[in-house]
Image 1 (spheres, rainbow, N blue to C red):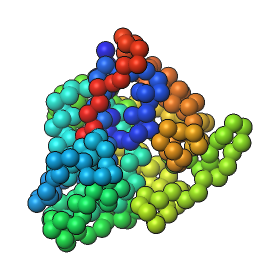
Image 2 (image 1 turned 90 degrees about the vertical axis):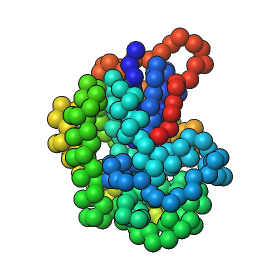
Image 3 (image 1 turned 180 degrees about the vertical axis):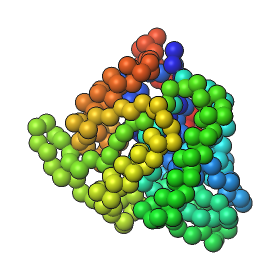
Length: 267
């Protein structure tokens, strides 16, 4: 059976509850290629239990980004397939204590930003040239890591996605309201879609041979999505189309038990 690692967002993770289960699944989320290779953030007091309103997996993802543990877990996991999707590359970064982390919603609501470790934190806007340079360097470092480790044996896959501009309900299409990466800050869909196109082009240039799966014809938001209406919570046909393409690349599903769920470790 395939062993699938995802560096990305819920658009790839959601394939499994919607369309079967993988034998093993490692999910690395709420991070960035600009953050994964940075040094750990020093001096952060990590809560023993997830601070409300965070759930366990949300808190694990946040802690992994602050402590930079995801790469070691990824290499040890030895996936047969490594899937990148870049939808989580929408959050600003923070320069803090000589390193970098993602200014995610999870970090915003965790209470950690009030700690002394973040007293001198400086924002790095996602759409800035500085953030793009950090991301490009991280993409190169990821390519080098893959070449130098057992990850070189994995099938590399880019799940190409964009922010949806419309929601579909039945046959009716409706424009989406501006999305807020953080409360009170609406984003321009076109700006982020241009950035995603640039990121994807760079990733493909540093990782020759990477396979691409995409379903632009089904890229519509779903008002009935389990996680709510969002530019990257798509209609069911989208996930079906992507799953078909992944299956053609050797991603298998486990059918051993009714109601079984995948083994997921948020990192």
